[in-house]
Amino acid sequence: MKICIDSDLCAGHARCWETAPDLVVDDEDGRGVVRAPGADIPPELEAQARKAASVCPEGAVVLSD
Image 1 (cartoon, helix red, strand yellow):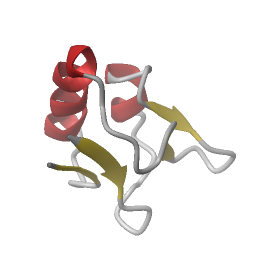
Image 2 (tube, helix red, strand yellow):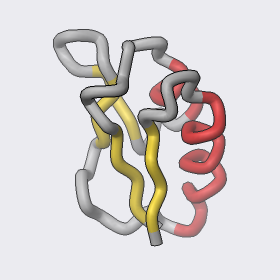
Image 3 (cartoon, one colour):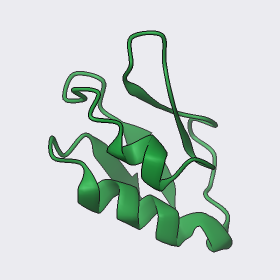
Image 4 (cartoon, helix red, strand yellow):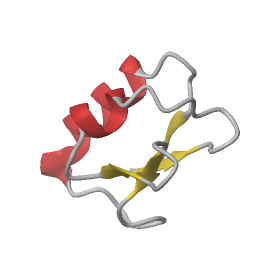
């Protein structure tokens, strides 16, 4: 599983990095960015990734296999 954040959709609500701090941080503009873009998410962090995607009101957090 991989996680990415659509920067065009992100409005900086902070829910992703509050929910998945091991995977997402905020950038200088207050928007979420993935800590390791393109990297596979370790199995033990997949629940964090799913939660981050589910709480994003803009749908900016995207998960893929």
